[in-house]
Length: 99
Image (cartoon, rainbow, N blue to C red):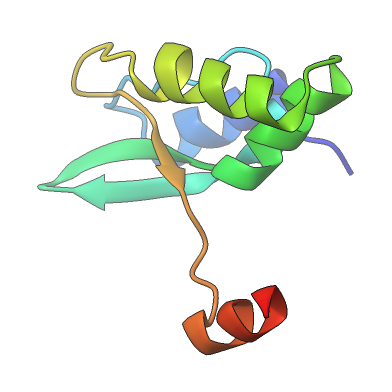
């Protein structure tokens, strides 16, 4: 099931009625939830899912990463600026797959 902006905004208004939490345009399906940093709720997105969304829009992997890192992660839009989760992967497993 895909997340819609309306579903996310409804949930945010119920769960965090006093906070202005920003949703990254076009990345609703990568929305994970809300993280709290210094008593400040911030939206949390899955980095890999965001890259997949850009690739589905026609970008190569390297184009998607470069675009996303510069234009999305690099954009400060105030205290509600979203955070992007880089999932932990077991270092030994990922190292052994490269050999």
